[in-house]
Length: 225
Image 1 (cartoon, rainbow, N blue to C red):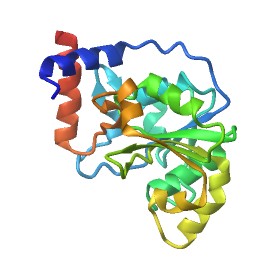
Image 2 (cartoon, rainbow, N blue to C red):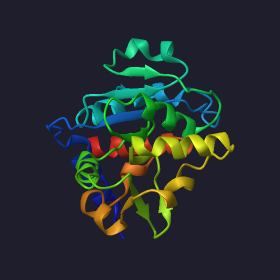
Image 3 (cartoon, rainbow, N blue to C red):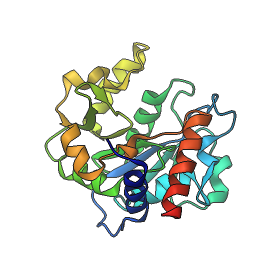
Image 4 (cartoon, helix red, strand yellow):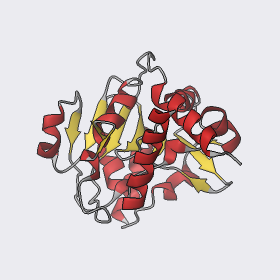
């Protein structure tokens, strides 16, 4: 069982890790289309350690890609952040994360894209880099925790998935992993994830006030170390 000191030490290492990685032939899709109803505010603009969550996420994935796409129907809300990204709207607003992913992947300039949500403040660049290295022969690369818990918004998708995504959307089905049985999937298992991110902080997202408090506490503890 990891104690608070382990947590602080790991968080400090992760938040300070170097990002001098070569640009790959892969796009990055950042989903910023959620309504943030449980928070009562736009979580993409929440500031953690002086940086908006959206900006924090964009800077992480930009170390891996020369084609960063932010999917949002409110691009004017984020213009002041000065991000070097392309803003793309949902093809059909209000249809959930699968529509956001589909819209971003359609706009991708490369054959595949890494997809993340904008509210994942502790993305681990080393884990992302490992996933990219595993993506050559697969249509999807996705982390899998506890044998069956998938992280579809921390995953790589080939543009070959687009017709299958379109079919799900036409059928009114919104679960991203519903088409996985029809494509080549590389699951990144828990033991592999632990090599890069033993506390699974990569998958922390900010959906509730409690999530937001946790993210702030992690940063504060890391600074106090």
